[in-house]
Image (cartoon, helix red, strand yellow):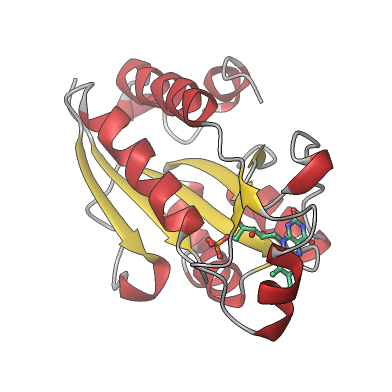
Length: 182
Ligand SMILES: Cc1cc2nc3c(=O)[nH]c(=O)nc-3n(C[C@H](O)[C@H](O)[C@H](O)COP(=O)(O)O)c2cc1C
């Protein structure tokens, strides 16, 4: 069954935006109608049945526009399927799941979403923004460690879950959410 899906992202240097695009492409393959948008471009979520929200992580925090999105649309998100992801870890510990910032955790609980899944990120000189990012990019932290297979597999699971949920059963979605590997 085809659904309307929003994949919204908050990204400073473009890496998370590209992950969101990759997810959108995967979810489209399941026949869903997908918009992939910077969270700052979103004016309303009423037309969407499901929302995937992702943020880049900076100094253990989510980008403020992603937090703003969660807060602004909390009531509408409560009655929709919601999946969260964040992207950041680079360098030798790129495969380490990152903790959700406390403010995001509280908002995730409020909208009934399970904790965010972590995807490795990218920190390269060509795309780095700001002095600190450029400095970090030439250390062992530099490189593009995004795992496209992992992104595709997760988006595939999300798409299948979106297909399987009856609209009439929303917002009692917990059993379906638990089926998705985190
Ligand atoms: C100043 C700075 C701080 C960062 N802090 C974190 C962090 O706390 N946790 C993390 O996992 N990644 C951190 N990163 C890595 C970024 O999240 C990573 O480069 C990410 O892919 C950037 O996403 P974007 O291109 O969508 O902005 C940091 C990067 C910079 C430049």
